[in-house]
Image (cartoon, rainbow, N blue to C red):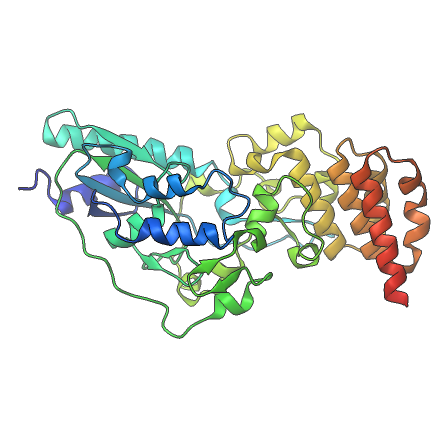
Length: 383
């Protein structure tokens, strides 16, 4: 017998600032552990060393996280809003993924789920054991959201929520409360494959399968070393994340604009930062601008590395001085090496004179290797 009505939970969720919510049981997810293990074995999760077979077993069993859980409330935080795009101000700018422009969604979701938990306790008149989970927890957010009927899997592997597309951050509230579950939506993308065809790197290797090492989100955020040279030209102007597969999705294009202050950028640099600025910022400036946002995860050197690549992709001759300065004097060898790549990508035949002193004097082997590789590649291309 249920302790709390399904519609009552959804009302309380809305009052807590959670626009989307659905309920499922806390039973294990049939077949999920095997699916995740097959993705691990195929190398699709390479780079996520923490995602092991043991982790897959836990992710498929909610009671491994809360042994007395009886229900899971899947919640969603929609965040798409109208965006005028980059300003036409003559400044070469990068692009930050929409979800990362405002306050870190982990904090927002957990705060609102705690409020929902409080409201549920007040409604039941008793203490309720719960766990508030966002994507860093050992559970599959998308599997929960699908079974709960909050949305369905798109071929880009994101959950598509009616009215919001995949512009929704997900969380879960595990409860020791019996709540009637919702039914899955049983919808799919049909014959559409726009996301597969438009992915810049071909990271969506099959419907519902992403090869993470190829994904620009992985390369710009999780990758701590050098971005593979074959991927750099495909980066475009992205410096944190990538939204292409969501932008081209017909369901996502029809998303309702929402007024969600927590997901709005505090400044232009939180959405479309100057690439010159990113190449020269101090650690203090980096932390001041991006404090409390997901962008901190990339670290200053990662963001500057990405900026060098983006400038190599969209820049021109006027950007050579700032790239040369970064290649010669940036405190991070990783950034210097990617600035060398960008210099040569823009300068072409004149590249040798720009980096001649660098490859002779830089003390770090990754910078020297980049110089040698780039010059040899240019030489081979000329035949």
